[in-house]
Length: 204
Image 1 (cartoon, rainbow, N blue to C red):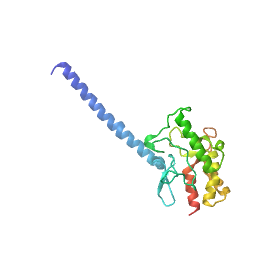
Image 2: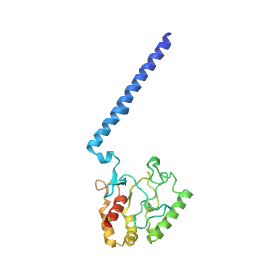
Image 3: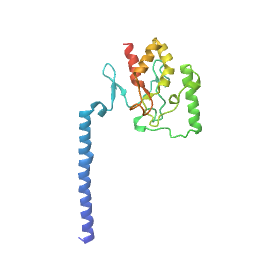
Image 4: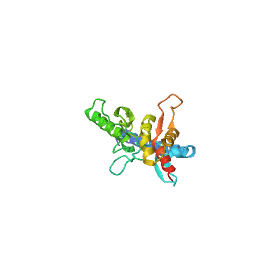
């Protein structure tokens, strides 16, 4: 075998062995070790931060938003509504991302105008009272939270539909509102799924 060919063959064999070794160590060993450690330390998060109802059924994840609409896409009147999503057909973890449209894009401007009118009509408020998270998607399209302001304008509707005092619904909103991280990072936010589950539990 010529010297050049032998050198090439040796190089390929070394590269193949390195690839196999790194695949075993990093692809299988490291992944398995991290998964095992996560299951021991934070099993709930390792499994996707799944949320269960009182009957133990999985109803969602605390990390992912979801729609509270009927089969036709209309908002369910007895539930707090999440912010819009541009991820796939909505809250699709396989298509995470925003619309990628600029603030002056005609399509985005029209969509926001339409959403604002829809939310205002549904909640019985002025269009100017509808907060930004009621008409715009988050950067990921998967945000499970809304602002306290958006939650508060939904209280009268939800209370009316469920036959509950507004004070009781506001109490639940407050219970499911988290403050700023470390007291100063981010903004207060309301966990929509947990809030809606609490409302359902009141009627059981």
